[in-house]
Each structure stands twice: as structure tokens, then as C-alpha cells.
Length: 231
Length: 388
Ligand SMILES: Nc1ncnc2c1ncn2[C@@H]1O[C@H](COP(=O)(O)OP(=O)(O)O)[C@@H](O)[C@H]1O
Ligand SMILES: [Mg+2]
Image (cartoon, rainbow over all chains, first blue to last red):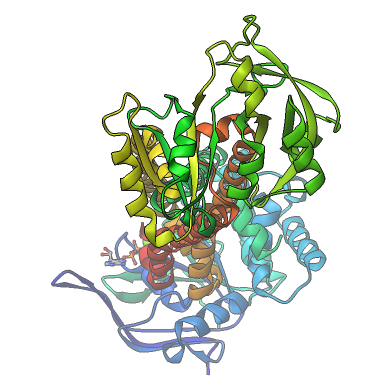
């Protein structure tokens, strides 16, 4: 079985009496260590697809299997536990907790583990070192630039050492320079640390950092012509 | 950082808002304990308890401040069902400074302690009091407070009675002390006979009578008989059971106090509503954040529990402070004799039960305020939360 496999996935949202058909009969296969850039017009269902893979939403029909787990069969609590161990999330607007320092934000996912306090702290600092922000450990998000906040968010995403990173427009709110830093960081995480990355982006330059590029349009996936598809 | 630390940091994030909420609730519960305890005194007979059941109190009909003739003591003593009559007067006493107010009564030493057996005095001190012309006894607590010694000549000022020479400062000899059964009963007792002959207003008057009757059942009947005896005299009286008399006395202040209680209770509930609203608003601002925590893998129920415990913490903690300070105030008022005359001092048992009920109320408030955020937190889907 493939590392990530979506089979005949349908996702509808009910808005009042109206049903919004977002994903229709979608199939997707990804291998471990892949770096997928998911592109497409806004409203095409990219985030929805990402949420299904990340286990924070469930399909209306079809099957989502990630790293051997069939997400459709899992309860909310099981999914939460599974997410904390398997997936790291990076959002467009960083979504750090404003009242916690960078270090504490990064430590947050480790509260769900059995690690001791000192070990949690050490791991958080290691993650911050990985994103080159060790010297900002005691700063609160408000005292950091957008790019720095996103790096803290990435540190938070990797601190529990998940196999998969799910990034929804991680550079969407950043200037070019900061965006490049984030993309380089993601590439390193993919290359050197073997993280499987699924990244939604509008930016063709960002997509260039990925190994695979797919376009989502009207709920259907189309392989990009320029992309070099990994085996 | 631990989970508990996380909840703490959350409370601390908007310092001003948390502080204000905390402070409001603190004040609200302080009021609640203080007024709740006093309101209980108004509604039930906690002042004299069982001992008061066989005592009647007779005072001037139209104003408790008026005196009544001393001869009533003997006349009433003759009535059937009356065991013993003693009398007291309101001396308006203080020690050294008018601010050191003392509840001071000139009394008849030989009958007073028989009518009030709950004031325990040794035979030796009692006979010294009976025999000493300018004798005085005080509660042990006051003797210790002012570091008096038996045998001391103690100057006692009066706000009301000058001596014949116009001097408002009297001198009495401390011949003993007594121990009241209940805290808060802190009257300094003076030899009436000396007071009676030496005060500038002339002899023959007493403030009010305490009448011990043989059977509590006879109380209303005897009271009516006494009142009708003097109804056409120049000094008509009003007689009631001791607890009833206490209530009537309190009622003079009670109308004002009750009105104040009403206003303050309205304030109390307004404060609760405002706090509840603030806490609910604080929750709405955090929905997206809770979505992030859920995404990271925090369990729905655990997060719900966090929200609930946060609300409970935020309401119970200030309540604990409010209750402690409120109780402290009541005890403080109770131990200063001056205020005790004007404010009913609730017994500790009442204060404690009010304290317990305030904490229960605070807990209930926390649950009430926290329940909806907790349920919403548990139920909301991440996708919805992140869109909020
Ligand atoms: N929670 C939701 N409830 C109802 N409709 C939703 C919800 N989330 C997304 N949608 C709808 O689904 C479609 C795809 O949304 P989304 O996956 O966020 O698109 P994208 O990320 O590609 O911009 C949009 O039309 C959007 O309005
Ligand atoms: Mg999107």
C-alpha cells in the first residue's frame, strides 16, 4: 500500500439546504519522502484535501489511508492522537499562541507526550535550532517578523518528529525573501530529514521547490506538465 | 510548561481583563458574605438562642432610647409567672478616647447574673461587684485588651451621662471579670446604685428591663399584661421576648440595611452577569486558537475540560479571597464593641454557612459560565473553528 492513498474521495459541505460539492471522486497516491505542491484556483478544494490527509476532516465518501492508518475508521479522539504523532501542520497565518514564547509554542505538541519537562524543553530548543531561531526562544510571536513566526510554526510542526508535514500556503503571507527562506527550510526537511511534505501554494516559484506538482480544479486533480514526477 | 501552567498562562494573557474580572468577583463575594451573614441575622433568631426564650425585655414604648422608671422593676416582679427582673441602662461608655467605645451598662449586680446565667462569673468576683460602691466588671477579653488588673481604678467616659459636677469622665474600680458564653457579648457592667445617685440627670430611671419568666409559653401573656399595666401612665412600655426585642432593635437600622442589602444584591448579580459576559467573550476570541490546539492533537474532551476548569478557577479563586476578607471584616466588626451595637454581629456558624454557600455559588457560576464554552470546545469541528 502506498504511503498516502486517497481512493474515490468525495467531499461535500452542507450550507443550509445547499450542498457544496468540493471534491469529486478524487484519487491520489503519494510515496514516503515525496514533496508535493498542490496548486489551483482559490475555492478549488486545496485546503479541504489537505485537511482530509491531515486527519482534521473526514470525507463524505471514499477512503483516506495515511501511513497504514485508515482515517475513515477512526474516532475523533483516535484521530487527535494519531495527528499528534504523525502530522505536523503549518498554516498561512502561522497560528502561534500569542501569549506563549517561541520556545513554549514549540513545546506545545510535546505536552501530549510522556516526555519529562526538561526533555520537552531540550527538544523544543533543538527544533528551534533547526529553523535557526534558537536566539529568539524567549520572544513572543508579536516580537517576531512574519518569516520568523512561520519558522517557529515549522519548529512546532517538527518538534514531535512526525513523518508528514502538511502546509497550507505557508508563504502566502510572506515577502519574497522570507518565503525563500521558508521554502529552503521545507526542502531541507524533505531532503535531509526525510519528511513527506504536502504544500498548498499559489506561487509557481514556490512549487518549483517541490518534487511533484498537482493542480486541483473543480474537484479534480490534474498532473502538472512541467513537474518532474517522482517515481 | 505543564498543562496546568498552560491554563495559568492563559488566564494571565490579558492581565487587565483577568484582573478586573477577578477584582469584580472578589468584591461581589465580599459583599455577599458580609451581607448574607447579616441578612440571616435579620431573618432568624440567632441572637439569643434558647437561653433567650424565657426572657422578656421591656423598654419605653415609643423609643428604646427613652428611660423608664425604676419602680417598674419591683412592680413587675410581683406578677405571676415572673421569676426575676433585672435592669440595664445605656451608658454610652468609652475608655480614654471616644473612639474606644465600650458597650457599658449600669446594672444591678445581684440580679443581673441570675437573669443572664450565660455570663459566667466567679462567686468571689460577683460578691466583690455586689459590695463595691463604684464596682465594675468587664468581660475577660476587654480586661486583657486594655491590660487592666483587678483592683485598678478605671476611668470610663460617658457620651450621655455627666456626673453631678458636670464631669463626663467617671471612675470605677475593676473588681472582677466574667466570661460570656458567646463571643461578641462584650458589655462592661457598672454598679447601678452608684451611677443612679451620682449622675446629673437624677435618680430613679433605668434603660430597659430583662425579665426572667417561669415558663416560655407564658411569654406573650405576661408581655401583654405588663404593657397594659402602664398603657395609661406617662411612661408606657413595650414588652417582647428577648429575640423579638433584638429584632425590633435591629429593625430600626434594618430598614436602611435591608434596602442597602437589596441594592447590593442587585449589584452582586449585575457583577456576576458582567463577569459571565466577559468570560464568554474571552472564549469567543479563542475559538480559532482552540482549533489550532485540536489540529496539533489536543483531545476534544481535554480541551473542553480546560475551558471548564479555567472558568471555575476564575470564579472560585476571587470568591475564596472575597470570602476570607469578608469573614475577616465580620469578625473584626464583631470584636469591636462599638460597631457591634449598631450592626448585628452574626454568629460564626452563620458566617461559615454563608461562606460555604458563596463558594458553592462561585463554583456554580464557574460551571454555568464554563459549560457552554466547554461543550462548544468539545463539539466544534476543527474546520469550523479555524474559519471562525
Ligand atoms: N467548513 C465549510 N463549510 C462549508 N463550505 C466550506 C467549508 N470549508 C470550505 N468550504 C467550501 O469548500 C470550497 C473549497 O474550499 P477550500 O478547500 O478552502 O478551497 P481552497 O483552499 O482551494 O481555496 C469553497 O467553495 C468553500 O466555500
Ligand atoms: Mg485554502
